[in-house]
Amino acid sequence: MKLPDIDIDVTSHFNPKNFFKCVNASIINNNQIKKHNVGVYLQNIPIDPITKLAAIPYNEAGKYNYFKIDMLHLTVLDIFDNKQQMRDLLKIEPDWSILKYHDVVEKLFQLSKHYEVIDRIQPKSILEIADCMAIIRPGKRKYLDKYCQDRNKVRQFLYMKESDTDFKKSHAIAYAHIVVLQLHLIKDGKL
Image (cartoon, rainbow, N blue to C red):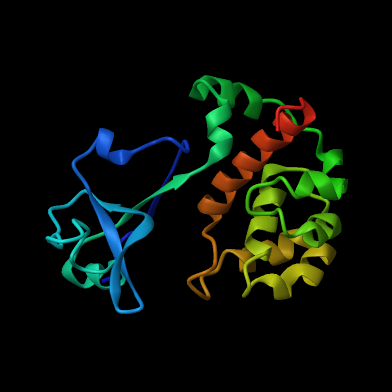
């Protein structure tokens, strides 16, 4: 049984240990146990006595019914004082036209190195930004030309799970919201 993949977006200064009793996930690198960049366990997982990390590497822990939660630090969240500020901005249509500028796309979460995709698709909605998020995945890049011809026909294929690098639609839409926030901040000169 595959356990859930849980990602939580947090500010860059968020420390889960200030809120939860948790253990940092571990990874084996060059035959040494190392701290996983963002993963933690809220479960009572065995702890390596020397490193104080999870004694079972994250890629093996699922076999024992432990599941890792990734606390993903998004610096764009640091700009906001509260969730209401983000909700208010998301109600406003961003200036999609600024996506034609390479220096704007270079600032965008997940999309910064994919100007050519943004330029071809010219997204004008959260769903189209989400589609861009899906298309930049290695296994989905093959759909770019067909997508540009008929978005609605191809969209269903973008979110079919073909590899571990593919995005679920809900995940892509969540990240597209981050991009919309960034577009507002760029337009206002805050990013």
